[in-house]
Amino acid sequence: MSVRNWRALLVPTVLVAALWSGCSVEPVRLGEMVDGGGGTFVASPDAATDAAADVVSDELMCIGTLCPVPYATCVAPGKVVHKCGTDLSRDSENCGTCGNACVEYLPLNMKSRCVAGRCELECVNRNDFIVTDNRDCNNLVDDGCEVDVRTSAENCGACGNVCAAGQSCRNGKCGCPSGKIECPFGLGTICVDPQTDDYNCGACGNACAPPQDACSPMPPETKYGCVAGKCAMKCNSRRYDCNDDIGTNGCASDGCEVGGLNDRDNCGGCGIKCKSSEQCMLVNGDGPFCTIPCGDTGMTLCPDGKCVDLLSAIDSCGFCSNACPEAGPNQVRACHKGVCALECEEGFADCNADQSDGCETNLRSHPNHCGACGNGCNVALGQPCVEGKCLMTTCDEPGAR
Image (cartoon, rainbow, N blue to C red; front, top):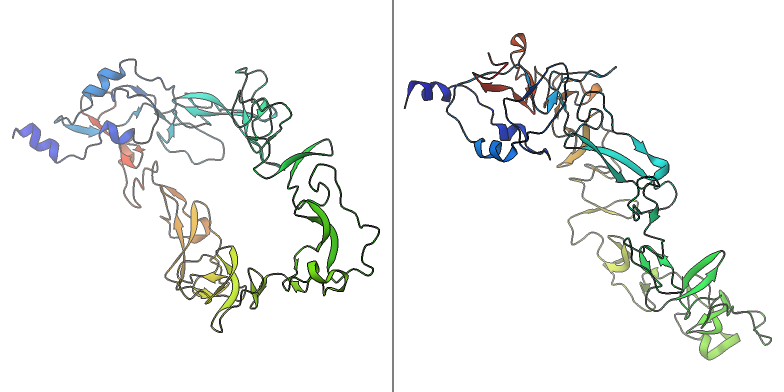
């Protein structure tokens, strides 16, 4: 091994590929620099040549002091600024050049974000009151994303998907689900089940009303409504005729005697009885079912009736209803083996050991905590921290020391 190669192994290196990890831009030459105080990002026109040349080199590495493309130092009022701390290829506040912010066009259901150093338009859904799925179906920027494909009969579910005549578009699908029919409702239409809908029984507009020979008084918790597509006596909402005597005893029936199907004698259905060791309860939001409370899950039944893993539940950590404290800046709540913890988001750390300001340190760009707390770059020489690594470059590059 040559002396030159031996010395290179002793010097920390930063590969071009490491600097570009996660960026959706074309490769550029490491030698292409922008000024440390700002600059403009321009992708290399010789990307294919650069990619072929992007190999491990035995050249001697030196401290880098100039920001490599696409990084720059963009100053922002009230924000902590690190040298080369801005990625001009994907920062929507500094896209392509410092201060070039990608804007929103909310009245047109559009916004822009930074992609490869350019603000690219895309549709946005403002779910203030209802869910939408806005698309630009006419390919005209002037009117933005003009179509909601969840409700447009001419563009149902996708641009250009036209519903059949008389069909409306609901949740991105033409017409009604199987077993339901489309009936007028207000200024539009609604899907109903003609087998059970009291106002569209058997057909649209056929509303059930008490007949002339209606029971007086009516059996308890009963009414006249739609049963199997015909108007007849039926139970009120959430009441059940578990002894099935309405059809046989008529007006002499004891009515709908069961309130809900969540008791031990009628758990999830009439006549389904739970064993002595079981309870009638919801399981993962389904049911109710007869089950041994939390018995097969290793969880704990809390007073609110939910099965909870006390070892990992953020809102019941260690014991029921013990909510872990709210997270600070760049933090997330966690529960590990029944003990609450505050963890830093990826790329951030609590280097000052002060919980009050959360995970205050950006390990991707902080020159005194580059990649890890206490790992300082050579600030005196102007060495920046780029993507969690102190910048190194080949010794014959501009800005190398």
